[in-house]
Amino acid sequence: MNLLDELRTHRLLAIVRGPDPAAALTAVLTLAENGVALIEVSLTSADGLGVIRRARAALGSDYALGAGTVLSVEAARAAADAGAGFLVTPALAPSVAEADRLGLPVLAGALTPTEVVQADSAGATAVKLFPASLGGPDYLGALRDPFPDTAFVPVGGIDADSARRYLDRGAVAVGVGSPLLGDAVRGGDPAALRERAAAFRTAVRP
Image (cartoon, rainbow, N blue to C red):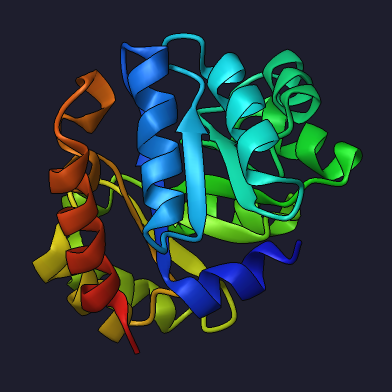
């Protein structure tokens, strides 16, 4: 899997994080069935590794399924063993170098220009601009000037309306958690999740 190509093509990364493993798995499968092609399961979820393992078995080896909030070397290895095809970090953590050692693409968290340089130097496939809501689309636009070749994926506080503004300012994709998942990770209505997935897919369409 070429993560950067997937991000550029689909432009939406769903972030699944929740207290109920069964509901989280149902949410992952519902998103996949409704055209969301990139999904990250946060390791802060209840039994996040188990959710990844079961989702991988259901979705097959080619689906772009990753692990999020991966901070340590040990967590990176466990996520890879569970079937994660890529890793996502909220910051420049030891897991970034370990992802490179494991041959896994990594979306490395950064906020400041210095951190962007460090993420690029560490071999990040793309930079997770987090929390994106702190500066908004204008801040992303300002970063694009000194870093025109960096692939940015804003995450944090992005809804269907603001997603388009981030993409227009140069993001290759946006990462979305609760505005997309809603209460689905706590056993909420899958039909509502399907509707939100359709709305976000429309919002990010080129």
